[in-house]
Image 1 (cartoon, rainbow, N blue to C red):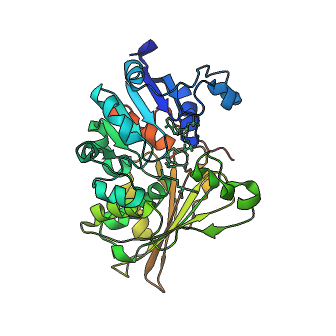
Image 2 (cartoon, rainbow, N blue to C red; image 1 turned 135 degrees about the vertical axis):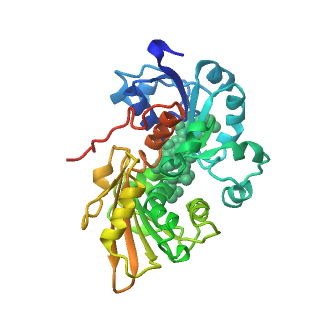
Image 3 (cartoon, protein in one colour; image 1 turned 60 degrees about the vertical axis):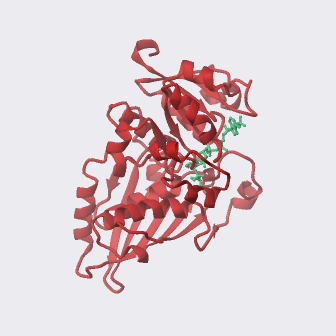
Length: 353
Ligand SMILES: NC(=O)C1=CN([C@@H]2O[C@H](COP(=O)(O)OP(=O)(O)OC[C@H]3O[C@@H](n4cnc5c(N)ncnc54)[C@H](OP(=O)(O)O)[C@@H]3O)[C@@H](O)[C@H]2O)C=CC1
Ligand SMILES: CC(=O)N[C@@H](CCC(=O)OP(=O)(O)O)C(=O)O
């Protein structure tokens, strides 16, 4: 235990977008303290050299990877790394008693053959993967509370699943008719330099990518939808890149089983479903979410409509991809794992008015 009863925490991948969000959140968390910052190409640099605006609060140097040292110093470790690295690091940390929260895809799949089909690699750690809990608290809160290893969801799956879950759980729509049309800001692609993310390339343009089941978040969304529906479900998911930095808006369409249902019926059902979920705000009738309301917060805003001409429900779900879609949700999960209030240390006020 660190000073004043705070829990010492390490972040591997501290220089990336997920890493810096975690640092920002940990600085103001009343029960956690930063005990280790790790990176690869940034190792040896002061964190303040990369993020000078946080330099008055964070004096640490980013250190090279040393799992034994991390485990000696930390009770909790966040792995915020490119896919395919966490599963090589987590076993040592777990063996030494650390709680591990992985922000990559390595521990999101209960069946590793799905992971390797989409992410490649050769994994033989099915037994460890099976101990991991999918870190979407609104669906798996009780299991997260008992977990030592959490696989935090992707940003698109978070927005999509929070929008779709009440409908699937209650059997209100035909699951196979669900279409998720989602748009993300560029920070979803991480901090690595990529030509498509240059301002000159990404500004003033709006386009779909990885269409027709080609995005790796498709199987992640389908895994949870199948769990909720009680049978295997295929979902149409189309991601888009929009010229903004933060935020995801998922617009979801599905055919209602009962065409007599109206908007108010569904809003009542959504409000009941999320009544104990402090990070989900179901909007009043006729109000649709905007990404800027969620920016910088751990909130998910949900609005919905029913189209009586087509008997479809249309659900809109907005999050900040770096917060509820990544680092904020990881802290929410840790709060639950520690038995604390799940809102502890997480911002509710958006960056914008
Ligand atoms: N951006 C988003 O909206 C979301 C991202 N995610 C996932 O979270 C994870 C992190 O994403 P993001 O923060 O965007 O990524 P970034 O590209 O911004 O950062 C990646 C980090 O990984 C570090 N790293 C890379 N290789 C190694 C290594 N071998 N050993 C130690 N550190 C290493 C880098 O360190 P260095 O700079 O020192 O080389 C850097 O700190 C990814 O798996 C991503 O898919 C999940 C949800 C949303
Ligand atoms: C805009 C953008 O590029 N977004 C990323 C998704 C980021 C994410 O959540 O990635 P992981 O599932 O790997 O954690 C993409 O489409 O690849």
